[in-house]
Image (cartoon, rainbow, N blue to C red; front, side, top):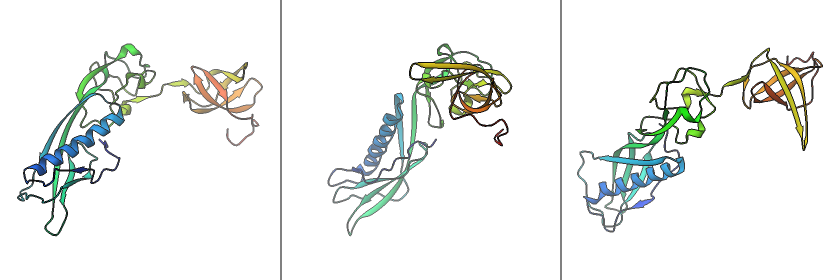
Length: 237
């Protein structure tokens, strides 16, 4: 999971001076602060963290001044890398692996739903799960309501954005309603879709006069024009 894309360096200092046994504690504190910032910015619901600082075989030494901690690689929570640095002529640099286990309340399926069925509020609930290995979990159920599964979804399954897609609201060769709005005026006419599309996508539509226009899908079998009509002999057909 590509969790921590924001930069973080030399943002944490251990007490002055830093005893050898305080170095791993400083690394853990820096890693915890980093994970907490990410959780806050990601909108996780009730996040919880467990951190494990893995020490190397090299003996640790004290630092006469404040040791600082730098994040080297925080892309994967299960294996982050931090460096503790003691500046000065007698300084040192130690690298640590920090393993984070992160859990939060995320969206899961409340019931079995067949492939292609549009999800409703009743289909989704929040449950606590380990998300350390999930790149695209969902914290807000409203983010998936209105989408449909690319395959059948089972009750209790963790919802991931990769499993979902916007449903096709306009299908090629189907009859559609072309609705044009300007201020308080609304005009509509019948048309035929020349492409299939989900909400927000652009499709070609032939109106009742035989003119082909580009239109944006706004709902089931409903589109709105986005530009001036083009000739039926246009090469975009």
